[in-house]
Image 1 (cartoon, rainbow, N blue to C red):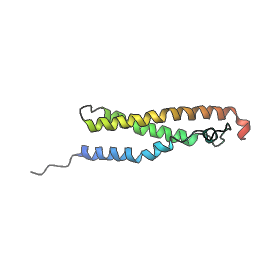
Image 2: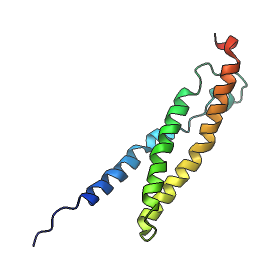
Image 3: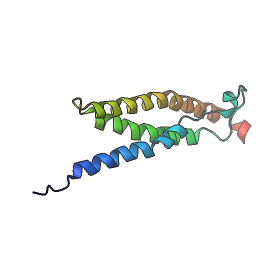
Image 4: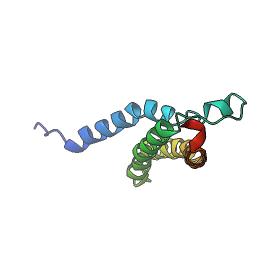
Length: 115
């Protein structure tokens, strides 16, 4: 007898594809919030950390959801591994996101510099 295709299998493949497609977004969220401080200077970056905040928040949403959805299944080692990788990506994004928020506040205080 022929078994019907299970939609859960397709949903899992789409979920893993979303995690792989979200990896460049997470990498863009790891950019330095202030390029001058990253190069060793102390200047104010007038472009602001907007892109870092956007990509960092988007990466946290994608990989946070991946960690929660895959972490529900403790009995399946592959899903537990995927959840662990998602948590590691989130742990890498959180300090950079906090640094970008700090730079955003510093740029708001120095409005006369960036005009």
